[in-house]
Image (cartoon, rainbow, N blue to C red; front, side, top):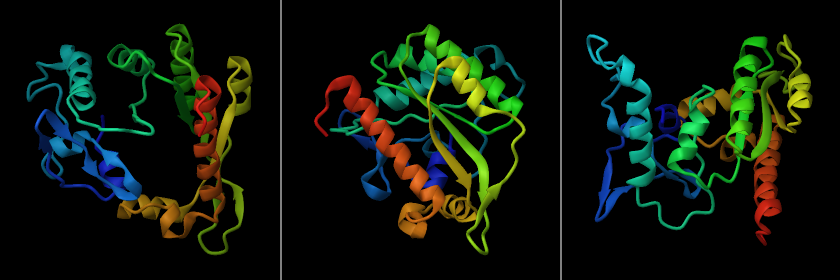
Length: 226
């Protein structure tokens, strides 16, 4: 429900596409069908839930939930292998989404190794557990860094112990993705990192392993043959 996905997939400025029974996803790279709040906005127009005088602030959550419901329910997705929804941070976001889409197969939490990030993620994970939402696991982002010149991997910062939170919550760390300047550049350029030479890098291997873990999680839960 944010505009970043459109930017990272090279789809900024695309208009909303209408079909006979609702909205159509915008065709993206690698066979992705994409829907984003960005397609409702013009240029760098802000996503203003509150109104010019802040009069809508009290209704922010309801407005956001309604918009997300429209993006999901009013889009003619067609046949999908997976529907991946990128939610903004916040302990209430996943349970609110589950009300719109009650058959959520699994949720991934993403954190960086700082106490501030882990505090927010821990709250979200506990809230997901209370809502009985299956957890695929925890992704540690930017736990290390890849040198843009030589490709060597080393520590970026480590202010907090992600493993401790995973252990306390009995959640598996399913991926550790290092910061790679090339990955950031690909996102800024709207290109697929794996297609732009990232497949053999440490970050690329971590992303591919994460995708495999999501597939295996689904297979474990449903007996899906693929």
